[in-house]
Length: 494
Image 1 (tube, helix red, strand yellow):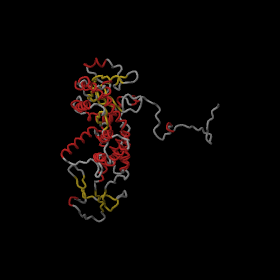
Image 2 (image 1 turned 60 degrees about the vertical axis):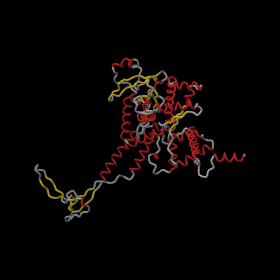
Image 3 (image 1 turned 45 degrees about the vertical axis):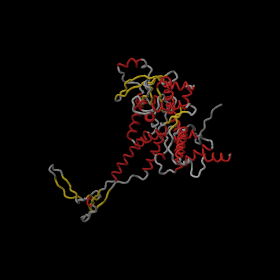
Image 4 (image 1 turned 90 degrees about the vertical axis):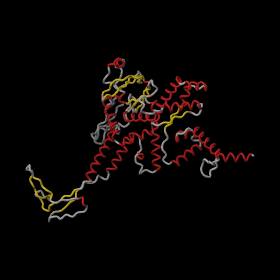
């Protein structure tokens, strides 16, 4: 069948296509080539991006706040062990994890405890794209920044033999990849004033690595701030300019004008006598001396002279709104709602809706860190099952499988702050009453409590109160307690 060309009323051929790929000179031409992401952000380009992000976080308060808020929501976790694990094992494990979570045991450099290092791990991922936690023979972690996973520029003589084994397969990204694109080894370097000195190759199974990926062909993560770095720089520069303009605006001056008009058609400044200094240069003295230090003053002007005040114009009225828009765009880099930055114009319902939306967007980021912590707890349980005699004996006595014990470990994200505590607590009570939530789950997620421990504490408190003869009622004023209901049923049955 012969194809027919559509034409307009003037006989010109009509071409239909996606407007997004047509270049009409109105804006930047569409991108014509698709490049592998690792080449798009090659080694030197990535170092420039990382250095810029680190510098902005160091100097720009908005970014520092953004990252800190992000860390509060996605990097803080609490350890819980399933209730079906025998209590002797559960208590022993909790003590072990609490002790190992201290900085003297968790960090090989003994600077960071578990919570602090997880925050730092996520902070590096946000600013640099990815990071790594290396499992050491000492049973602690070594935190490695993104730029130190690299192909070296210098190899020390004593490590040349080790590097020679993989020098032909290690990529510029610092990775040795397998046939399926999986990471086999990481190449770690030390940063010597911008020079990357080879340190060691580490097997991937001994590294807990994570990063931010946006394409399937990426082997290294890229900072989620990459899309807002330029806008953030604009915000920072705008503030500097506005501060400078405000300072100029605060400067006040007085000009004394003569009534006569010069040859150019404009009035000239009123000046005093002219004198010649020792170098032969002429100096014109002011005609009137003004001193603001004494408060209000009066000036007697010569006939025809006049006085004018001058100052810079105030910033445009829309400049604040424009900068707010820029800040909103910057916050999008980490999915942060603007109401969390400035809640002055938001209702309680709007803030709650924004918080819930942010919680939803934080899930996937939390899940990645939770996976790292799961790897950590599996590593330590394997280690303790081999070298902790008490732990081995408890496992044997209760007939518990190590793999089952690993599955019983749960890392629950830290609870979010209350916006309206009374309303939210009542909502939790309603959800439990309707069978939509369990007391245990709500206790973990919202209050960071172990429900069994809470019950034990309440029981001990009530027993002590009863022994001391104190009347303690847990519940709302006027509400019938469980004890009163039980007692009423018992009396009825009698």
